[in-house]
Length: 164
Image (cartoon, rainbow, N blue to C red; front, side, top):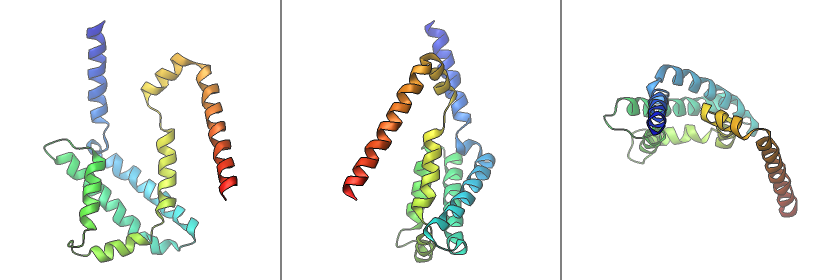
């Protein structure tokens, strides 16, 4: 039994390694482009013109792609988010050529509008392992989840009403 579980866990680890974004650069670039386009259009929420935010969105796209390419070809493993963060930090450091222009273009992007759909997707993304867990727990999990969501919403509404 123990041997079977370790084989399954090893298979899952290998399968998950192949599914990392840096290992599927083509698919990741397409999905990222779609997300950037959606985020670009959501930027009008704050009332700014679309064309003002376009250079900033392209810069964000390039920073992510460069970070993923570095993560793909680097001889040691570091999570993609770390590489993307390092590329972004370096590109905005004062000694980096053109950092003033980069920062000015990024200032045109409303990051709250950009991050909200991404966080919503991250909260809703389910894996096969989570579906298997859901099948084991059954309908009771749905009731508990609905009660938690409702309580959180009502609690947030009460706090917002009292504070605002």
